[in-house]
Each structure stands twice: as C-alpha cells, then as structure tokens.
Image (cartoon, rainbow, N blue to C red):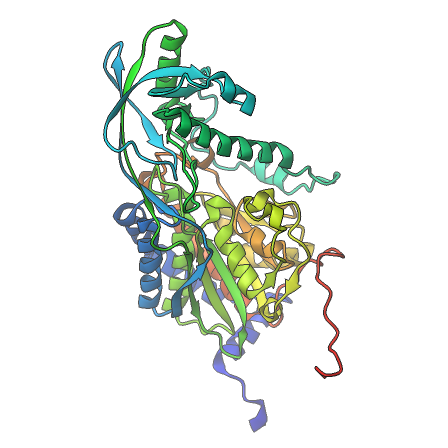
Length: 538
C-alpha cells in the first residue's frame, strides 16, 4: 500500500467531504476562519490606513501610487508570495487637488460647499467673477453665448427642488427583499445603455471644453445630485496628455447652488470668489494593479481569484467605495495565510485600479492573462471603452482554462447576504452548501440574476466563473456612493468581519474541491476561430 500514501490535509478533506455529503464543506476550517475573523480581525486597521493615512485614491494620482505600494507591501508582510504591481495602460494623466474654496461675495458674503471635478484645471490662485445662469445642452446653444462669457462663472441649469428624505438613510435588506431577489425575471433581453445619447454627450462635452477656453470663462458650476450638503462628484476635463482639459469645473451642494440661481433669476448681481489648487501628473501614464498569492499544493497551476477595486473618486476618502471591498479581500487572504491552510489551488488576490473609469484595470488583467479581444476600430479608438460598438470575438489564452473562479466585493460596507450567480445555475447547489455555515450571520440568498457595474463582469463576459456578493446597502445608495462623505465613519466593522469570513471560506472551498467550478457556455460567435496549424508548423 506504500503507493497509496495520502497527505494529511487530503485525508482531512476527504473525511469532511464524507461527513458533509456530495459537496464537501470543511467545518473545522470554517470554524477556524470565523474565530480568526471575529476575534483577531485586522480589517479596520487596513481601512484606517487606506482611508485616513492615504486617503482618496483616484487612478493615476500620487495617492493611488501610495495605495498600490502599501497594499503590495502589506500582503507580502502577511506572508503572501509574488506580491507585485502589474502595469496596464496607458491610462493617461494623473490628477490631484490640494485646496478648494468657493465664497459668495455679492450680494453678501457666504461660504459655499463645492468640489472640483477630476481632470479639470485649477484657478491658479483666487479669482473673482460674476455668476451667469446658462443652458448649454447642445452645440447650437454654444453659439448663443459666443462673446458673452469672458470672466464669468457659469451656473449650468436652473437648480432643482429638493426631494427630501422619504426613506431611511441606513437600509438593510428585509426578508421580503431577499425573497424577491431570488425570483428570476423571465423576459426579453434587457435594453442596453443608449449608446447614441452617450456618444452625443461625450462629443458635446469635448466641444464645450474647447468653447469655454476660447471664450475665457472662469469656471463652470453644476448642482450635486444629492441633498443636505452631500456633494456627489466624478470626472470632467480630459486625462489625455496634450489635450486641453477645459476650465475649472465644480459640483456644488444643491442647497447652495439653488441659492445662487434664485438670486440670478431675480436679476440680482451675484459675484463669487473661487480658489482651486489642482495639478496634473504626467510622469507615468500607466496604471497598476496590486497582485499577490498563496501558492497551491498539488493543483497550484489552477487559480482561484478574489478581488475588489482599490481606486476611488476624490471627494471623500473612498471608504465604502471601495476601501471596504479591498480591505475585506485583503483580510480574507490574511485569514487563510494566518491559518496556514495549504490550499490545493493557488489563491490570488487582485486589487484593481481604473474601475471608476470603466472596469479598466480588471479588463486589462483579463486581456493580458485570460482572454483578449481585437484592437478597436481605428475610428473609435479614442472613444471610451463603453462607447465602442463591438469589441470583437474573444481569443482564449492558456490561463483561461486554469481559472477556477473569481469572487468580487464592491457594494459598500454592508454584510454579505448571498451571491449573484450571473445565470450560472450549476453553481447553485455548491454555493448553497458553502453558505449554510453562515446562515446565522444572515447569508442565505442565491439568485440567478446578474448584477453589473463592477469587476466580476470582466471575468464573466469572457465565460469565466465570476461572481459578486449580495450586500446590505446601508448608506451606500443614499449617502456615500461617490460623495464627499464616503469616509471611515460610515464603515461598519461587524459587517466587514462577517464579509471577510464568508469571502475566506468561499475562496478556500473553491481552492480545495476536486473540480473547478462549472462555467456558463459562451454564446456561439463569441469565440475567435482557432487557427489550423500549417504543415510547416506541424
């Protein structure tokens, strides 16, 4: 029998599999994971450094570079191997801002809450200007204002009536919400985004930037989509080196924006002082993902991945979007490393950048390692990826066959309640078994529905088993998403500990099972034809 020697960890796994039934769950390891997660958690320490010592992490910015380097070093310090930064791009210019001050000067003094849009220039010191209410919704509108905008601060739009708060700011999914989520809507294919409308907006914004520079406008101001002093802001300008980024652009608290526009509608002269210190960073146009791994044992050539996007917008400190997901995935691999679990497959973490600009970092990783598409049509090469008509058939790379699964977290600080299966019904009984040890923590729901807007799509769209977890929304949609109050105080430590334990357990069990997780079948026509070797090649 000497040829039938079984390693101790394999024997333990087989015993657990026999006890649990067809789909094995190692309850001993689950218990250890829970103990480490709840009694020795480091997740809030990680978040404190990411959010408060480093701060906002706009892709291409100095803070993003600090976050990349710190997460790489932290993962290596925990004992993960091959911790490194993997470049992708070019992404374009970096941008950061150091100061913003906006004051009402006439008809009376008053400080106003506003934040600059990313990739728009500063004011080069404090500047004064008269406010002007404008409507610039088309290129025809631009001509109406030609010769009238020099020295003016343009308020874009007429303000809006505040909606008020008719639901709790902090929300958890009720049993009825989860039950409804499990119902799969059988319908025709969902309509995609209105590409033509988006392309029209993209072209108008480019024309508007050039027009405002020519007309010597001081700045443009838009109203925040949120009320109660919450400023929701993203990007403007251009990150293309050598392209004019336009004029200073700000998003203002809705209440303050409304005050100015009401005065202007009453023909009251309004003057503001604006001081924005912003810088572009052109020294490195590439961006970087942080990668590290726990090597596997007998199936180390196969990989289980987990990840989250490390980048954020610039107004808060990127706590719930997505410091929370990054810290949970880091905590999951820290837990497994601390337990010295010896996974059969390699466990690899990816902390992505450029997610906020269109899943760019994870898409680049997939394109480099797993499955690539043809270069875009030359006529659309300068368009954002989401505006390109057709990215062409997929060419699978050798690593595609070796990726067992990808697990993603990116919906704020709420606890995990289940998993979006992305239409992959074959994993339902597997995940059901894996979730059972966490039913007491509120994680029970599996839905065949898909969900979008984050990095698991980069894997799912090329036929890989990629999943996003269902989370309690908390304040994500009401307060923190892309706003100036996406800060540490809106993180919920017990929820993040729960999520870390579930993430660690899912990754561990995916790394230990005999087979890789089942995949969906890519539709016909998605794959590039495989070239037939020529006689010379043979």
